[in-house]
Image (cartoon, rainbow, N blue to C red):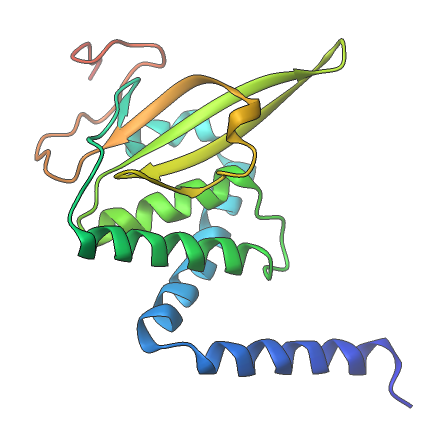
Length: 179
């Protein structure tokens, strides 16, 4: 008797078999993406994004576009890993945890990135939010829906910057820092 648990086990076996066929870089990125997606989902639920947003760069700033081909390739691999693993987490990995996880993975590899937050109105009363991440010219996460949203905030994380403030007031201009 196979039941629903048998089909679930088969599904996980198939997923692991697929993961084993990936090259070593993709495997490492996939496991890191899984970890960071869980970490940021937990932080968003327990602490709230507003309390740790300052960790993700300068408010209302953007990083440079372009980059070397090797950096573009690495950024696209990070985006692929985050998007793929977001579909297979047992928790909900919506756009904000995906963008935060991809930004953290880019940061660890010395790639500057910009996190964008946007909103749109659906219907008369409902407002929806969306997050996406850009590294160089490529949008790593959230590209499918970003055109439907109006950008209201951005956080630029340039890894070349040595000084980072401990806390940036929400809504502060670049250079205005409250410590």
